[in-house]
Image (cartoon, rainbow, N blue to C red):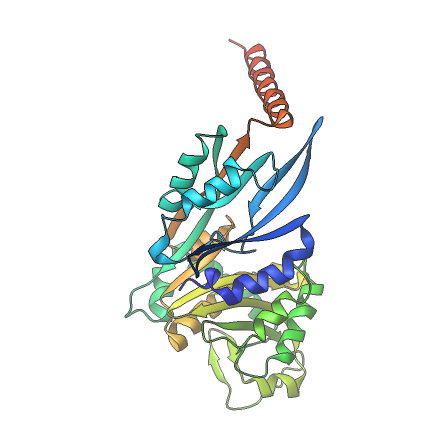
Length: 366
């Protein structure tokens, strides 16, 4: 099972996002008494110039490109006509447009839906939404092999980061915890780092805490952390690797080290899902995000034997550095041309396009 489509994850996302939208709906489809599909839907209103449109969207996954549609494998194609009839022909939620984000171009299920939709609403837009980077490594690879497979520039960036730390006299402790252990101390460290970073929580404040404390047979959530050893008194017996001390959770608590960077992963089977990296802005010159992501991947490869990684949506440089598979995701917009507001909006949009083209033509010089 894909972690981002697991019931546990979808329930957590739904509970954490429900207050963000105008309306949240759960569309359930049954075959006699058997539940064969569940689709969480949201409606939002957007102000365009001179007109406000009402949109319907599938409730997203916060991080993933995966849509939030749960369909029984035996009914993958049976349910699409019913969904289309309910959302498009009947327009059950009285919307002006339906938007789908992060759609895989090879997604046969969505292709069938869009094909049927265009028969009734006719106006369909398709644009690249974002890239989704993945990493797949050989089963006989260890962390060192993976490091050597990275581009020379990336390996140099990692070495440079460690060298800067050494020259500055900064000593770091690297550790991690999962949701099968007492993670409360490190969760507090996560929020301390978040408060000193430039990032905000993607959903409600307790979302990551709930995730990290979840007890699920489907997945394990990990925090990988860097603490600064302010006193320089690391206890003996600590492993030493890549200029970073590796120590236990007990040592971290006793020494009172300062938390400065955190990376969050979830594993499900042999797959790892990257969620986020956050670091204290005061340490931004040391490439802590890159160093910690590398250390986290190495630990996941060597200790937990994770071979496939999803770096989630987004086109940040570091995802291209560490990933080796690029997938483009698309955004589809289906407009309800039976709506006067929608027709007016599309007319204004076309006029704006032609004005722009005329402006470019008039601005040309020979």
